[in-house]
Image 1: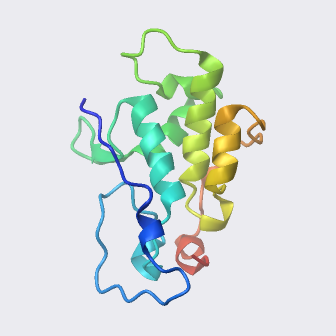
Image 2: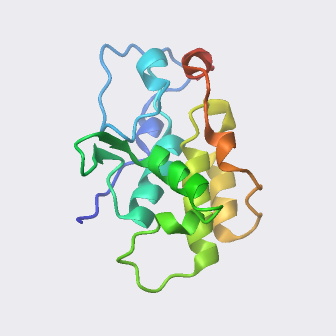
Length: 159
């Protein structure tokens, strides 16, 4: 797998006090927040979550599984966590021979939290950095917290 570098600072180029006049959506599938298609605002937090999951799992954010079905990495990590009796580290790339289990768990859970379907449920990047630096413990949550049962929740959530 070849690493890819993303520019999470593109949002700084936009004058946030002005209205955006976007005529089309551009970006890489899997890194775009679900609400982007409706509201036209990208979220760096969602892309960062997809990125750290990609690194930890050794998988692309979206791809095809062995049966040719669409595999969405965020959903796969959540499903793996639910099906493995709470052992989220089973989603870690098996090619990583040596890793600190607590750090892998933090990265996986933080990746899921950053990729939450509801924008209001995602932490801000300052908070993400505090979690990664160990300044704050990641809040406890179960895989079910990450599920959205109503698609309208995503489409109606404020950007």
